[in-house]
Image 1 (cartoon, one colour):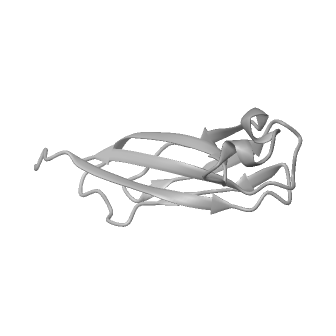
Image 2: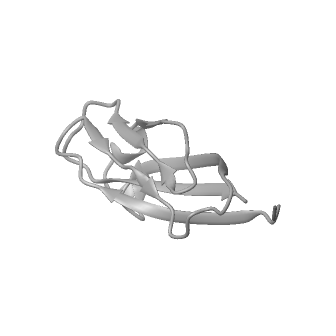
Length: 96
């Protein structure tokens, strides 16, 4: 089998009208063998955290299921209680 490392990444925009949002990741190209790692970073959807004094304190976490060759189920949970701010999820998936 081919053991060539494949790296895929992307970003998901999330409207937080609720404290939890589905943000399942479907990789653009299905990994031929398997996906063995997924990592993420998330935040408030702005390029300027100082635009609003509370942006630097907004918090969220992401829960993942087990990855498959085509992606992974994910759930963004807003832990700061603020539903009025759009969030995003950067992700990177490694496989072969």
